[in-house]
Amino acid sequence: MNAPYSPHASGPPPPRQDHVPKGANPLRRTSDRVESWLGGLLLLALVLGLPVAAIGAGLTAYDASMQAVRTQAEQRQEVTARLTSVTEGVTTDVKQPAHIRWTDADGVVRTGTTLVKAGTPAGATVKVWTDRDTGSLTRAPLSEHVASVNGWFAGSVAAAGVGLGYLAARAGTRRLLDRGRYAQWDAEWARVEPLWSGRHRC
Picture 1: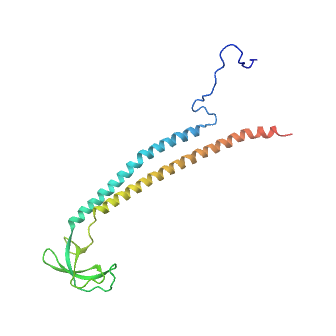
Picture 2: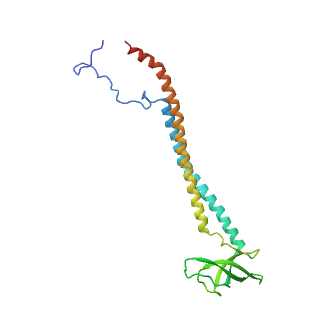
Picture 3: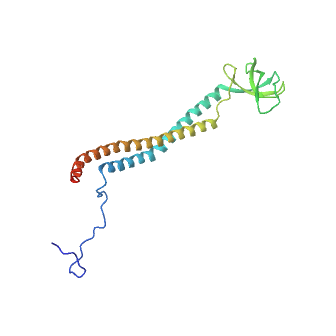
């Protein structure tokens, strides 16, 4: 039997085992290592995928909206029309329908109905948008501001989707691993419990 080390004994002291190598923790299970690795991979996918998805979706939506802006700008034109009926009401913050008349590029007089501020007198001029081919009234074409808003909105939705996908993947991975851990615990308890319960029997 070896005697305990004494400071008066000759020879170097025994080496100290203060440093524990990484991964040598006996309580660290294989499933814990798998979860750590998968968590790192998912985090890497989030860091790389989120900006790519957001920028890609935003640019795609912006380009599609700008294409609509250019198409509508080519198909529609703004003309000056004259009111032929007096709108009712005295408030200036509410628009009401009124009859208008204008002359198209071919010299044809056309009539229609549009929304103008309440109280606008008959004979006043208003700006309206018409279709270049049919000459009928239509809405104003989309603006570049709308295209920018659509791009930002699509990018934000894509970023949120990637973030939710990351959270769902993390939760699903942990749930699957926990299911395996519980099964392992049940199997180990089934082997150990009879020994422990027999030890305490009288």
